Length: 198
Image (cartoon, rainbow, N blue to C red; front, side, top):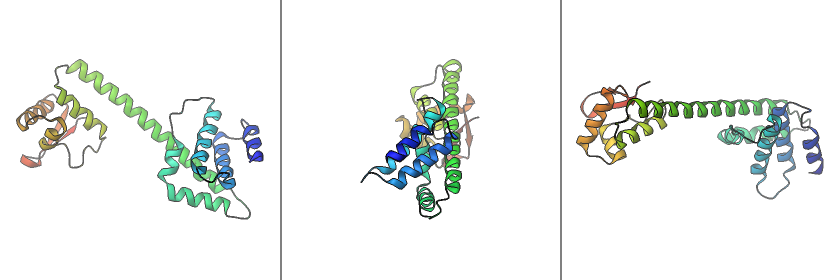
């Protein structure tokens, strides 16, 4: 463990930051110094190494989340890298780099979503200040559901369940949102569904 710690401290700025994080994590997991918690600590080492490389304590992306999203592959890659006598770490570093890239993409998407949501609320507050609380709540939920929206789409029944208003009020408010150009309506009768426009 002492050799790992010396290398970790000495390697800062000496090799590529992503490669350093990958190697630090792999080596830590190979040492497996604790009875429990090695995975969590090893993933925290990744976040520390990347923060050091970027010279910033703020982390907008989570590599740990991406590693755990591919848990079976993650363990297989760790095993492949540490289970060979020649210890070729090249495939591990390559695989790890793709997870870092995905973490960056996820962070960018999350940041864009937050900016889009801010723009939506700014638009609603300016152009549609008279929306009811139920309408605002439903628009927020539709936005949070993402481009695919709710499973089966927003219906009058879902609006009633979500907002607690009567069926007549739900129909009236959904119609109002459609007429304002905020929702698009598809289908007819019980098959009528609504989705966010744009």
